[in-house]
Amino acid sequence: MATILILGAGVMGTALAVPASDNGHRVLLAGTPLDAVPVARMKAGGIHPKLGAPLAGTVTILMDEELGPEHAEAADLIVVGVSSPGIVWAVDRLNGLLGREKPVAFVTKGLDREGDRVVTYAETLPPRIAGMQSFIGIGGPCIARELAERYPTSSIYASCDRVAADFAAGLMRTPYYRLASSEDVTGVEACAALKNFFAIGVSTMQTRYPDRLRADGQSKNPTAAAFNQAAQEMALLCERIGGSRASAFDLAGIGDLHVTVGGGRNSRLGHGLGLGRTVSDVISGELAGETVEGIDTARIVGSLLRQIENAETRLPLATAITSAVMDGGTLAFDFDRI
Image (cartoon, rainbow, N blue to C red; front, side, top):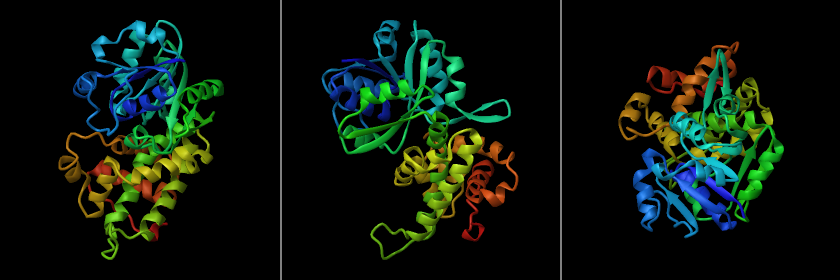
C-alpha cells in the first residue's frame, strides 16, 4: 500500500481519489483555498457537488490550512489537480511542503513560454519546484464524473523518466482506469493543452451546421472534417513545440479531443460561436466566471503561429480560433481553406 497526496479537490482531483482508494492506497485529498465548499461538504460525509459518486471512507479529506509538510513527507506520489490559473499557487505550495524529493504528477493542462519559445509545463515547472524528483504529465480522454463512477477510461502517464511514469501508472491503474505510459512528456503535455483549443473550433461546427432531423440537432460531416483538420494541425504544433507527432494521434491528442468536443466549457464556447456569436459575448454571458482553458492556450498559440511560415495556409483552423479569441470576434472559418 502506498500513500498518495492529491493537491486540489476540484472534480478531477477528487475523481482520481476513486481509483487510488480502490487500489487500497492511503489517499490524502487536500483542497485549495477555492475548494472550501466541496471540501467542507465531503468532510461532513457528503459528495462533491459536481460528482455523482461518494468517496471511500479511507480517503482523508483536508482543508488547505490542514495540509502540512508531514503529509507530503508521507506521500509516495503527489498528484496536482488544479486548473492552469492555479499553477502558480500549486508551485508555491509544493515548495513549502516538500522537504525531500518526490515524484509529482500533474493533470494541469496549459502551455507556457520560455523566452521566445512556446513550451510545456514539463519544461518550465521542474526548475521551479526544488523537491520534485520527476515531472509526470497525465493526459488522455477522462471525464472526471465518469471516472468517479468507474466507467471504462483510458489515459496516459508520461515522463522523461519512464520508470517514474510506470511507477505512477502502476499505483493508479485499475480494471476500469486503463493506463498507458510514455516518455514523450512534451508531446503529451502539448496535446493536453492543444485539444482544449481545437475543441473550440470543432464544436463550432456542431451548431453552425444544424440537422433538424437528428435528435441532437447536429450534422456530423462538418464536425468530422473539422476534427480531422484539428488532428493534423495538432500534430504539426505538437512537433513544433518539441513533442512527437504520434502523440497527437493517441490518447492525449485525438482521444482527449473527442471527449472535449462532447461537452465542457471549451465545447460550450464553440457552440456559441457556431451560432454566430462572438467570443466576448459568450464569455461575458453563460460562461461568465468560468475558466475556459482553450482561451489561454489560444493566446500562446497566437505567438507560435507568428513564428510559422504560411501559418494561415498550413494551420487554417488554429488561425481562425486564435483570431476569434484575440479579437473577441466570431470564428471565421470556411471549409474551402482546407
